[in-house]
Length: 464
Image (tube, rainbow, N blue to C red; front, top):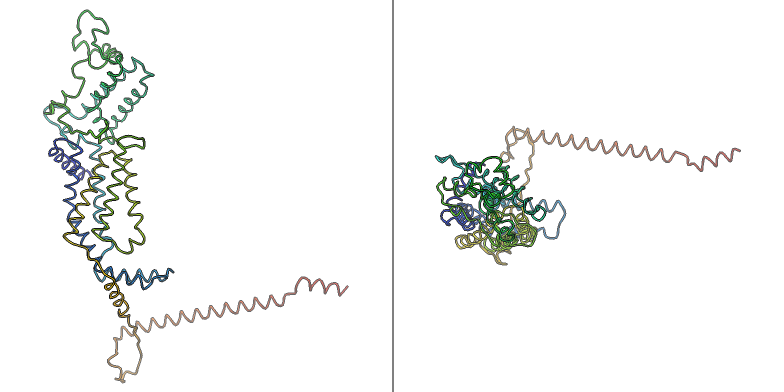
């Protein structure tokens, strides 16, 4: 699976480059590339639908032959005839499932890539001469969050209880570098200082002052002195991180990796202050658009599929409502379980899928059928040859009357053994039935001979 992650990550990196680092647009290019890669499977699926369209009149004729008979034996016989028809025509009912099955590992791999956006869209995790690694970004992010917590606690820990808890949880998540750890780090890199700046603007008490102003020192402290443990502790939990040095953000680390600033990284912004890395919730906000659009595009994709690619009578009879409404609802439900980027990809996938279905329908149109063709197919089904019975007879060796019907001695021996077994089985069944009848007769006789309780009582009274 790691190889697939690497391949998908490389494609995502290329998509980010051609989309000018716009992650939302990169997801569209990614969906388009995946659609092109899977196009041959779409051709195979369309050809399967064309074949289904050709044999559908015969399938309908078989179903009409057994119409109104819902017992299990009849249904099994009908299904057996349909499967035999599929076999004769070379049609596989599972051919249409192949593209969907192949898409699943791609979705899972993309999910892993989205959860590690820095690893798979940048070179921050690659070793180079700078000596800077991704772990340095984790350490810097933790320092910044701790500094923000210190400022919030020093001003009003109760008022900013939720903000403090959010930052503590972010630190805890980042320590799990696998899983959602990199998602949390990415959000801190992009929006950590921006979010805190909004708080500062709303509450002047959070404005970070210089170290000199707070402690009223007579002379400025050097950077070396400020890095002393005592001074650093006072700074972190009383003033803020800007007083330590100019390294209060990630620009110096990014510059060491050959980037100017955060702006050189992919842009994850979505709408309403939310990003493609956030997961939609059931609360009313802009992210609800993602599951809603998943439902709409999945619904339209299903309609296009039935229109352009055709659908068997069996699917129309048993799975129509589920495929029309159930699958889009399930897709929308899963949209609340993954980062918005996964949902956005699925939306793009549905849209490009509709376009592919239209193109394939023009290349390989699914045949339609008329009532006359249905009637003709019904007649062919009725005229279908029935299986012949094989009857064998035994004659004297010198009798040449039936030489044209002779079979090999080995075949004859097999048939004799089979008849013997059948005769033995029939004889055993007859003996068993006879024994059951005798047992039933004996039981009946015993019941008739046994005196009733009232008769016994009457005989006793007569004797007295």
